Amino acid sequence: MTHRPASLIVVSYNQGEYIRSAVQSALVQTYEPMEIIFSDDCSTDNTFEMIQEETVKYRGPHKVVAIRNTTNLGVVKNLNKAMDLASGEVIVVAGGDDVSEKDRVTELVNRIGKNGVQAAYSNAELIDHSGRYIRDLYLKRTRVVTNSCMEIAKRGSTRIAGCTLAWHRRVFDIFGPLPEYLDSEDQVIPFRAALLGEIAYIDRKLVSYRIHERNLSHWTHVLRTGNLDETRTRKVLQLRRLCANEAGMLDAIERIVQLGPGDIMKHISHARDLLQSRLTIDKFRLRMIEGQFTLGDRVREVYKLLTGWRTKTAQIKTLLSLLAVALAPRVYLMAFRWYFAARETLRCAFWKQS
Image (cartoon, rainbow, N blue to C red; front, side, top):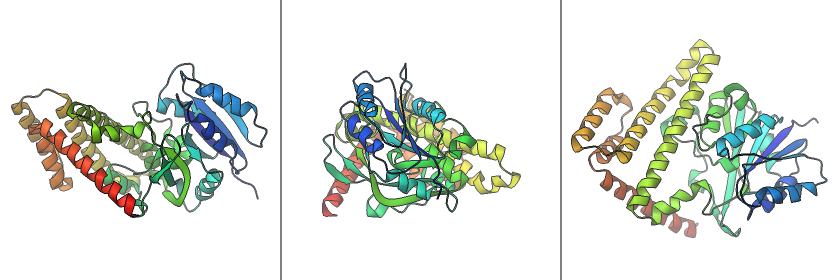
C-alpha cells in the first residue's frame, strides 16, 4: 500500500527550555514517507543550536530540514515560509514548546482526504512549564463542535487550537499564503478547509500543549489577575486578533467565490454577511476602547452602526454590549474582567470534579 507523503512543520522562537523534547517527539514519528521541517524564527537564545544538536544525530527514515530565519518574521510569515519548503500532501504543524505522540502524524493523515475531509484536529492535554498535566484541552461538553463555514461564521471562531491541527495542502494551493496581517493560523486555516469540505475531530490526546508565560494564549492569565489598564490592553489585543481573523475569513470567501461556480454564492452568502457584521461590530468595539470619544461621539457612532446594520442578524446581547462599550468603556472593561474571572473559577471547579 502506497502512503501519501506528509510534512511535519515545527515552528520555534526562543523556546530553548522546551525545544529538545519537541524535536525528539517529531523525530520518532512512525508515519512514512514524511519530511520534518524545523523553522526557527531567528531565536535569540539557544533554540536553533539545540535543534541542530538533535537533528545531526538523527539516522532515521525521515527527511529532515532545519532552517533559521535571518530576521524575525512572526508566526504567520514563518509558517508561510515553511509551507513554501513543504512537499507533503498533508501538512501537520507543531510548536517548539509542545510534545507530539509518536503516532500523531499517522492518525491525522489517515483522516484527511477521506469523505471530503480537508483538515483534522485532535484533543490534547495541557501541561505546565515543567511538563505536569493540567487538564484535557477539549472537555466532554466541548468536544463535538460543528465546523461548517456557516457555523464558524455564526460563532466567529472555529474553536480549534492550532497546536492540534493538520490540513491538506490544497488549503494553501487554492487560497495562497496566509495574510500577513494575521498573528496566528488557527482560525483562518480551518475556515479555509471548511469552505472546501469537512473538518474531522479525533478524540485522542495526540499532543501535549504547554502553557507558560511566553505563549500566545497566556493573555488569559492577565485578564484574570491584572488591573484595569492591563485588562484594557489585553482586550484591545483580543479585538485586533478577532478583526484580523474575521478579515482573513472574508478574504477566503472572496477567493473561493472567484474560483467556484456561480451558484456557490447561495451556499456562503449568509456566512459572508455574518462575518461582515461581526467585523463591523468588533472594529466598533476596538475604536471605542482605543479612542478618546466624547459621549456625543459615542452615541452618534452607535446610531450610525445600528442604522446601517442588518437587523435580521442582531442579537440582544450584542446590542447591549455595543451600548455598554460606547457609553461606558471603563464599566464595560470591568464587567468583562469580572465575567472572565467568574467563568474561569467555574471551569476550575468543573475540572476538579471531572
